Every structure is written in C-alpha cells, then in structure tokens.
Image (cartoon, rainbow, N blue to C red; front, side, top):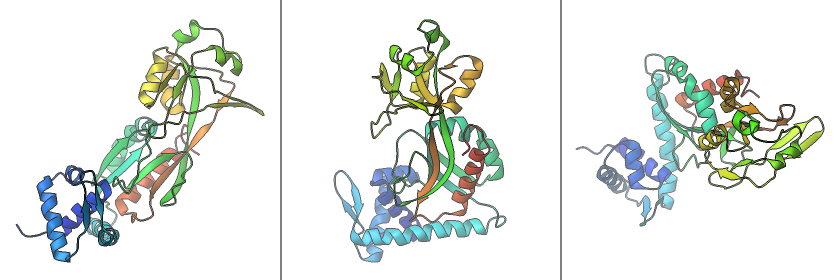
Length: 304
C-alpha cells in the first residue's frame, strides 16, 4: 500500500494530542499497527525522530513539537478547503469534538441537537459531558463549554451564559423535617455536598437577599462528584441539594422537588465557550459555537 503522508500527519497529531499510540488508534478507528507504520514512514520521510516512546507515555521530540504545530495548521486548513468546495461555500462539514458540563449537555444542548442536525447535516459531533476540566489540546477537543473563571492563557474565551442554581429538596424530606424559614435553619438539616472531579473542591453555595448573605459551610451529610447522582440524591429524599436551575426546573414544576428559601437567591456560575489559541477555528467549529452560543443566549435559564 502506498504511503499516505496526510494520513500519517493525522496519526502523528492525534498521538501528540492523546499521548499514546493506542489512544490515537482508537480515536481514528484504525489498528495500532497501522498507526505505528504511519509514524515509521513519516520519520523515514523526514529523516528525524518525531516521538519519544516510554512504557507510560509518548511525547514529541523537539523536532516533533515543531512539526506538530505546522502540521496541525495544515490539516485544519485542508479540512476547511474541502468544506469550502462542498455543495456550496456555506456548507460546513467534518467532525467537531466538544466537551461540556453535564447540565449544559443534558438540559440545553442535547435536546436541541435535532435543530442543529437539520441546519448542518454534514457536521458530525463527538460530545463529551462531565464535570471535569480537560486539557483541550492534549485530548484533541475543538471547543468546550467551561464553567467558572477561565484562567488558562492558552484558551480563547467567549462568555455565553450563566448557570443558575437553586436550593431544593424532595417533598418527602421536607415534610418529615423542621421548617426552613431562615438560612440559619439549614444548620439543623441534612445538606448534601458536591465536589468537583479532578480538583476535589467542594461547591460552597452563597444565599443572598438584598444586602444580606449567608454561606452554606456546614459539614455535608454526604458528598457526590457526579451531577446526575447528586440530583438523584435530592430526589430520593436524602437531604437538601444545590443544583442547576435548568436541571431542577422540570422536577420543580412536577412537584418532585421543592425550592428551599425561595426568597433568597443562589449565585450563578459564568459559562464560556473556549478553544485553543493554537487551533485554527474551522468553519465547522465556528458553526457549532455560534449555534450553541445563540441557543444559550435565547434561553432564560442560561442567558447572561
């Protein structure tokens, strides 16, 4: 089989981004032996060693790192070129890998994807939903929704919305517990905590009413690090939870959850769309980013 330089470049870039031959092979849906042959052929063609291989990780050499930066631009430009000569210049096509917090995915983006598929039938989405903060470049992610302040100087940051929270509990829990008329009453109740995966930092809700504020700092009866599990614990009557309003809304309307201290407001978390400075923003990524930003801007539960 003839050596395909472009496919070898794609294989090399994925290896750099995921840090392993196995991960790159799985990502590209090819055999690991194929990936190895492509890299051998590319190194032979260029006459340089592109990768350091250890038992735990694969990393680019100095020459490999320089080659990756140029190759990534070439491949992204090629994808854009192919998209530009599709049925019309307005047709974006190709794969977009995007990550987002679970509440954004399950409550906003995924339910609206039929509309996106109709608008952009030639774009294939790979969507990841979790509460962890990922390395976009290392994991080969084109863009991501990021909650909270964005401090990574290597990311372009586009503020697009707010994740609003509410304090709530199941009717069964509240009927069997002392009334909650003031924030200090929370100290007599079972509060369920949420910790962010990766950092292990516990979310600390702050209630506000006018100039008054109350920080919920009590020791949680239980802690959870998965948004769905945390919400389910509240629905099961295990205690009081602080969950995104977008996730709680349907349960509040159906009476499965009841808002606690409705006269007090919980803070919100800024939501941004981010992508690497080093990654050229292709037509397909821009199409998804613009659609998602507009979707969030038009939803009262998420808009800025």
